Image 1 (cartoon, rainbow, N blue to C red):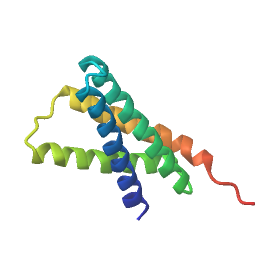
Image 2: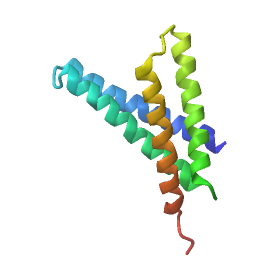
Image 3: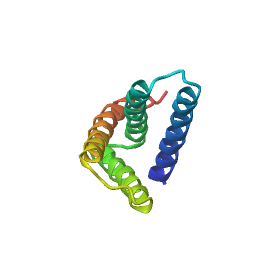
Length: 118
């Protein structure tokens, strides 16, 4: 259940950030190159927030929880890519590796941010 909640949280953040930089690009506030950089930065930020959230929910082995979450995320992205007949190239593989590293490291950090009992 915690993976489902975290995955929904992750995809809500993705939709919000996508809406923001789409609006910025549509009204010519940002250029194409800046928009591409903004996409990468926003996805890394989303994965950091998701990793910290999953790390806080786990009791031990934050790296393993982050790896599980990265696997779930990559399976969903691969499924969507194959559904829309998008070819996987080296850029996508690098993106998936960034996803794995970011989620694993941030969940290792997130496990240290547990709420303290009073």
